[in-house]
Image: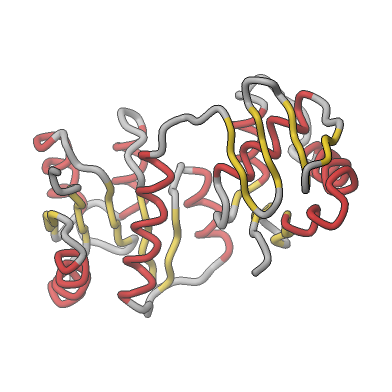
Amino acid sequence: MEKLKILVVDDESRMRKLVKDFLVRKNYDVIEAENGEQAIDLFFSKKDIDLIILDVMMPKLDGWQVCREIRQYSKVPIIMLTAKSDEKDELLGFDLGVDEYISKPFSPKILVARVEAVLRRSTVTEEDSMEVGGILLDKSAHQVKIDGQEIDLSFKEFELLTYFVTNQGVALSREKILNNVWNYDYFGDARTIDTHVKKLRSKMGPKGDFIKTIWGLGYKFEVDA
């Protein structure tokens, strides 16, 4: 099986080496770029990169600019690395279509785990049914069962739950949920998400607690251990 190819973009050579060493151990093929311009050149010349690990603060072009440029042409998974932990930066990242956001300093093992999770989500084939934490979603029948009991969901509630389950463990902004579940055709207040989540939680009973609120951002679907 061909190795998955990851582009690591950081102006610090020590950081690139650290990340590369851990990824190579997991049998990934790693390409390095030391600034934003080089990253864009490599991405469009290689054409077979499966994921990008992208630092925010870099010379020539910063991570945000690189992300904007690539997102015009590709949905390749992007993990942003930043020394900042500012909520505004995190929100900007999600708005630009970043898949994960990791603040420095970080554990390389955690980074590798995030890489594996993002790649699993991006390469998974569209299945007719999914099951997690006692919740069974049947897409073809548009049916949901919780612990074997069918629950009655509206079309949008079903789509919302499907999106949550598909993106399990990922922090999702209200705007990102709106754009994916409502497909850009809703121009009202993103807070409509809150109303739908409230109804969905209520219908799910105790399993509604799997939908966690992230204050100031949105929601995360996480199955309790």
